[in-house]
Structure formats: structure tokens, C-alpha cells
Figure 1: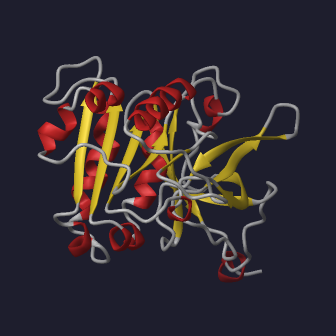
Figure 2: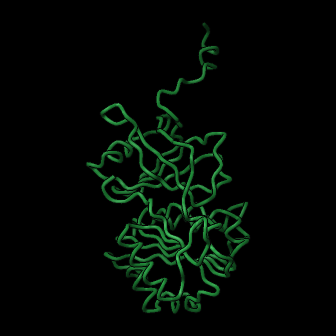
Figure 3: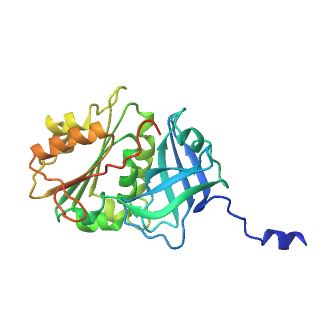
Length: 272
């Protein structure tokens, strides 16, 4: 068999529901993002998640829920993850390289979708750490800017370097051929840190409750008649933010019953 014929033989996938890693970026010693091939049949709404994983030591698939960070029109799928040294999955996943395979169950689900919110004028994306992943998808979706006059992305991390993934994404949006013109003047980015000196500091809940974010951005406080919100973070963060949002008069919604805010409860957090 000649060399050209050998190259034409498709690579045999060794994992169930396997997709090929195309790119890996290590942002810090705790954070990395990766892109994989997209199954031809996969259709998803921006903000949804899928199950991603590798084979465990016991020979069975080890899967965790990962929000799709790429928009629904992207030809590949992007994910953003923490690294846990002794985590069952990420202790292995953080070492993947382009050309490697990962398991991807092509059944997207989730609550951080436009369909779960009532129509409004302004939408808030509230995230800590890798919780920005679903909003990385939503911020690159034209539907977001068709449905809302204003989009506020609040993202809080411990340090400045942990904000870098989100910062680069937001800065590149204005130059995006598909949605650059839609984003300009509509998207307001409000990153904060909790452990390192930065122009804006403090927890999302604090900056909402004391009104600092409204003052800094020169915008009106939340109004349940016009404001909508999506929340993605740790369980403790979600509970704290829910209390703040309900203090403003917003109610939690779902795909089956749209209201003023929604929360992603399948967020990949510590211990993975």
C-alpha cells in the first residue's frame, strides 16, 4: 500500500462518542481551554452544556457537565476548565494535546438559554471563574443582541490573570465579522477581582447590593420590568446571587416557565 493510500484511511476512534482535540490553551496553572471537533449532527442553543470526559482507570467513561463556550454557529466546540491536581477527570484532562480524543455525549441541555427568559431590555450575565463559559457562547450569539438593547457581563475571579480568558474574548468581539457591529455600544464588561488589586474589586453580590456596578457603568439599577439575568458559578455563589436578584424583584425561571432570571445548576466546579 503506498503512502498516499495510507493517509486516506480515516483514523479509527478508540473512545465511545469520540471527538478530536484541535487546540489547547493554558491560561494559568489553574485554568485552560480546549477546542474539539463538532459532531455533524450536534445542534445546540448557546448557553447549553454537554457531558465531556475520558476513560477512567476502571475502564468506564468518566464524564462531567461542561458548558459549551463556543457559539452555536461555530464549526468546532470550545470548553473552558479548571485544573484540579487530584480531580478524577481534570487531573487527566488538563494534559490533553491536539490530536487526542475526548468523549463528548452529543445531548446538549441547560437552563442558560434565551428561551428560559421573558422578553426584556437588558440582560445580566453573572459568573465566577470558569462559570463564564456559557456566556462566552451567548456573548458571541447574534440572538443575544437581537433580543436585548444592553448586555452586562459581570465576571469575578481571584486574580487578574484568571480574568484573561474573558478579557480577550470580550475585546475581540468588536472585531468579529459576524457580530462586531451588533456588539458595539450594547455590551458592557465589568470584571472584578477578590484577592488582587484591580480597578474594580469585590464580589458580584456586593457590587450589586451596594450599587457600585450601576454607578461605575452609569446605568440604572435593576428593574424586574426590564432586566433579565443568567447566573453561573459555584452552588454557594448561585444561592447568594439568587437572593440578591430576588431582592430586586426578579423571579427564577426555567425552559418550561420563563421568568426574569435563570441559574445553571450543573456548573463544573471544585473537585472535578
